[in-house]
Length: 175
Image (tube, rainbow, N blue to C red):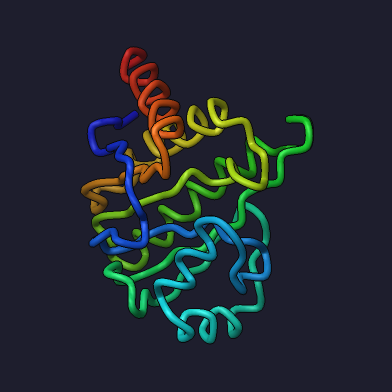
């Protein structure tokens, strides 16, 4: 596993000056609330116009668009799972979001990628569990992504940042 290239920060992902930011999208890719709405608002109407051409996206998969008015070159859209009870493949679907985003980042020559906390807002994924899945999946996948220099979890608030910091520290202790 490779935790050295993973950072946890608190901030506004729409201001990230990176190659790609990840959008915790819905399956329509046509905008929504939370981080999805903020990204669409900051990027401008051209992002929505491009998203309309993509035909949606299945939960756990990912699609990429230009960043338009965002400082990021690309937006990688991934619909996370809605949490029911933990017995409906939610953990695997969430891990799949992170894997597929990194795959698209590599295919599009992105060296820096910023992620939000996927599925922990209105999709109700328990924050501590989501953080563990996210950092473990990223650390495992970065082993196969030498061109990605840095991945950051951009956390909206202190509580979210603490959950990701705790998960990353626990993972580093295993290495």
